[in-house]
Image: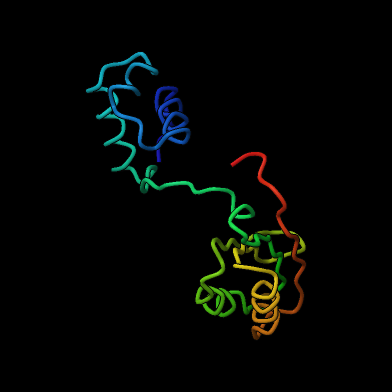
Length: 143
């Protein structure tokens, strides 16, 4: 995959701020033509750099939800099996393999603390999971 140009990086930054910004607005902000913005967006999509557009919603804590990050250690070579089991939990918003003392990092979103407790029991009860450490996310200062 080729490196991103300065224009590509500035376009991506503008889209992160407002993924619904009209092409005319993006062109003005970036100091290029609408055709250039459209071509760059098409290229970024074709290269798989832009994979979709989404909406951001109010902070989960304000909606009464509980968010957490769970660090998970798995036994031996069971990572693939554990990942398959954890993929089935709708409360896991993202799941990443990592290096170091932990094998997986999961971002969780639960409706309340009781639900959060139940999800933690499911994760810890998954065959192959030998240890976990979970931290509640209190507020987001950068997203």
